[in-house]
Length: 396
Ligand SMILES: *Cc1c(COP(=O)(O)O)cnc(C)c1O
Image: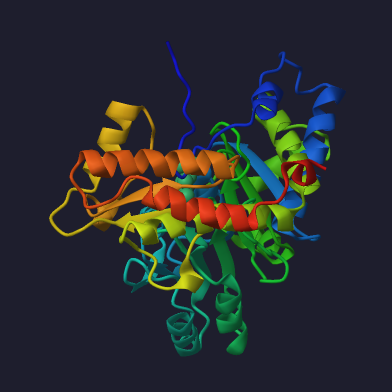
């Protein structure tokens, strides 16, 4: 029998029943008028979620990684210089992709646990008098370390020296969960996927292009076919696609954006903050440390937790899966064996989070760590008691 426990990996996330039903729909002809009834609200809804009136939205059958490829291949040319910082597995993979596409990446090595070093970006941009750097790449929420970067500070770094580079932002594990202000921060391309903040199955890359990014598309020379947004834009103009759209997922995305907007984005962000605060209170009660080095870096969607030296952090994740059938995230890259991760994004409640915290306590005690059963649960309970909104109010 398949018993379903909530999942605590940082994507894919738990799916609300209504979204599962929205995705499960009869086949419809994507060239019929019915498709427009899905496509139009999706494009309008995503625009609101990323907070931009002027962005153009593109949705591809793909995943977040395809979103990276779509962003760079539509706006850059072989040999172009781009600036980025490496502070976790996801920022690392995006840099690697750029190199494989023949871009020259200036990488600022940054300790894992820190965020994007805007001050060092400012220096690098100031030194680039000839404006050879065509794009700055930032991973907003580094899912490997549980660190949120300050995108506004990167925008200030660009503006302080009047640098015209595009600002491309990976928001895969932040958009729809933590505040994201595309227009205000001057983001040129925002990238996400369907399986994190949007609470859907994996299968869509979701992008927002600023007018400046749309302009860059005209002269960009990196090869692109499947991800060419010019073909996609021609499809949208006639309420269609250049190929077959993932109609069920798009229908889910329509409902998901409606749900996020009707809950209210500020309420969605507050809910993620509240749940994350409970998790952090538990971590503190266990006497363990987050990878994120300072409070302003704490991610509200994922916490990466260091375990004592000499202890294999992966054993917690393996044990939770084998004994209790609950999924948590392993440490990735240089945190492999040194940290484990709790995903707390998407459709999650305080009560679900308490179950995850309780499970981790059982695992840590089973494996001999000096953690007391109930200590983290009690700390999280206190956090939730003092901050929970009445369910009847939240539903209204
Ligand atoms: C999950 C994730 C990705 C990769 O997305 P896929 O959908 O797995 O391709 C990229 N960046 C970040 C920050 C992520 O969390």
